Length: 134
Image 1 (spheres, rainbow, N blue to C red):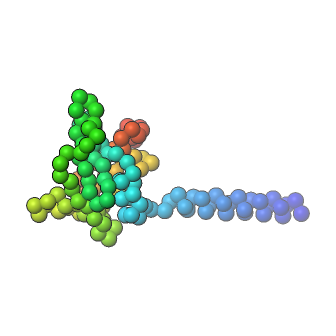
Image 2 (image 1 turned 180 degrees about the vertical axis):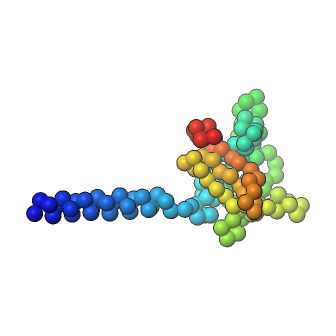
Image 3 (image 1 turned 120 degrees about the vertical axis):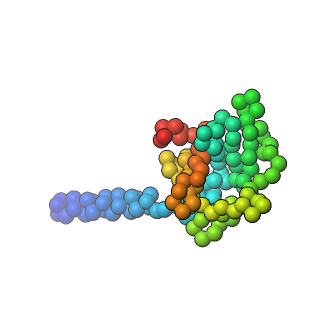
C-alpha cells in the first residue's frame, strides 16, 4: 500500500510540474505584446538616456530627456500602430509604413522589432534590469 501511495504521489507531482511548465512556454499573442508595450515606458537602444517611447491606444509617443530627465509631455506628433495578423504595423506618415514581428526577451524587458527577419530596432524597458541580459 505504501508503494502504491508513493507512486500516486510521484505521478501527481509530475502532472503538476508538467502542467506548470507547459503554461510558462505559451508564446505571447500579438495582443499580449501590444499590452506589454502599452503598460511600460521604453528606451531606444543607443539613446537610452535621451529617447523614450510610450504606447497607448494605437499611438506611439516620443519623449526626450532634458537635463537628464524625461519630459512628462510627449513631443507633438505620434506614430500610429495597428495589429496586422501576428504583426505590428506602424504608420510613420507620408507613405512610410513598416510592419514588424515583435519579439520580447529578458522577462519582457527587451523588445526587438524585425522586418523580414532583419532586426530594425530594440527597446529597453525603463527602470528594468535589462542590462543584466545584454
